Image 1: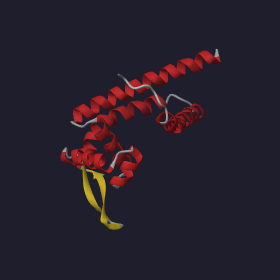
Image 2: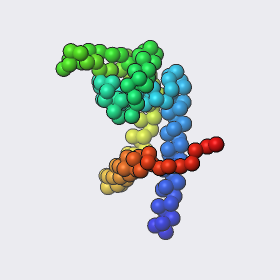
Image 3: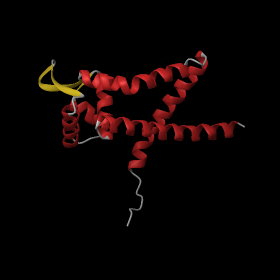
Length: 156
């Protein structure tokens, strides 16, 4: 019984990941961005203001790819470069009003549904869900380097 539940949870996680990918693909399309740009915009949203080098660190993008992505995000009007108050030569990125409004329009209603869904659970169940998500996230990051080192046959 326990193994069956574990298996169905694994399947549910894969389906959830597919749904998340589809939602993000749709959001990127509506915003006129690609998925890399959307990922960078999400990092700016979560941090308030952040340096390009920090975004590059989190995403793994090269300096050139980072600059290109940020140029597209800025040109689309979702974020802007501002002077870093702690480093006169540095810049930070922050959302524009258009960026805040667009993110709110797309993710706001989705977040409200999530809150309603989570409110059905007891405090102990919520703690278990949170712990599962933390464990799953940590497992993903732990396996990134292992997967990078795999030598799989290339397509011919």
